[in-house]
Length: 321
Image 1 (spheres, rainbow, N blue to C red):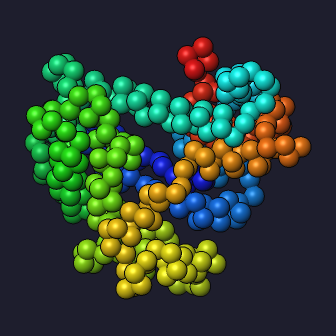
Image 2: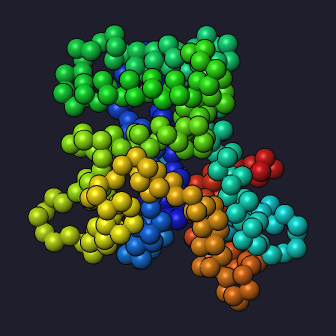
């Protein structure tokens, strides 16, 4: 879970034309800051932060770096964040850096997978190209997908992807240019795609198919009650959150407008919240700014932060930043 980070796109995995597609969870996840804070309080190490901000693979890469190397590379990033070179990092500078890194991450991700989908190399991805690249093997060999769960998942994913693709295809030519394809892969970053994000969230959580999310469905999306024991305190808190803040019209369930308010609150800026969090945790002299020394003193938190692009800035040429 992304601590204080409001958006974390669930990336679409590239599948080669002749390869067997891999099931993927393609829902765009928005995390609740209050729930994230609770999880952080329950954690006694930075492993939670590393996996939340880096993902498990990137966290493993970071774990292979020595503390000295990590601090050295983090120090170079700090110099880039300090836009006016006055030796202090303000919340505004940190927020701007986080937003820049997030945007770069999104567009770099699309660049990495573009060739897997632009099969005819015309610098556009048609719906047929995407369908062939992602679902071609399944469509040609349905008998190999005997597992009922796999069959159901692919049958569900295909029309869902098509619906999202059509929403991203602003000019209606059944082909996506780079910007349109970026909005398809990362709908959380584009205003015109947010209705799709709300709808997909509703469909994923609404297990009884009544078009709403009730309290039990809301909780089940976060917590699997497997042992029959008492619910953790944070789950009880979330039930109260549902009643007090999610179910705005007090009818016992969330409709689309309430889901939008939940996952995309208009008064919440994830980059601002993350920047404030990093400053609060690392500002030793409480002057509301960070020095390079203060950041390096708390380096474990920063290498697990969005400020370092999920750790990728620690392993790339910093002249590119």
